[in-house]
Picture: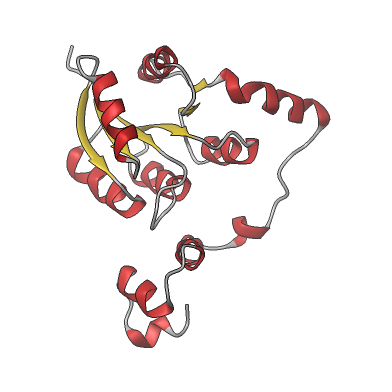
Length: 185
């Protein structure tokens, strides 16, 4: 059986190096990227089976990058490995097509278990967030529709870059827009 091909997307070098060591011998790490745009580009060239990604990627967040990946490559499995335990992130990730969601404080065995589950076509959700999700479900707490969900992908991308402190001209360069278009961001 051929090894599972994994692409890792996280801007934290220590996290990426640790993941590579954990996964060595278990699967083939085909690449590492540090931001959402690089992730989307790498998926097409590296053709991974599974992407392990962070929610808080720079330039294009992991949720939006994951959504775009699932639209263009629905067969690729996404496992989020993040610090964000809030159920709104979990809900959004799963709605965008994630197969797994773990926290960075999870055990190594849990990461390997999530990979095995996802390879078999199952979903994996860390018990560290399951309790909160179940409580919210029982209480009838559901995310409010609207807000950011009403924005286009490009608008969410611009909003993230503004929140990261980029100036309009810098955003225009990053998004490959002309000066004329950049005044209408």
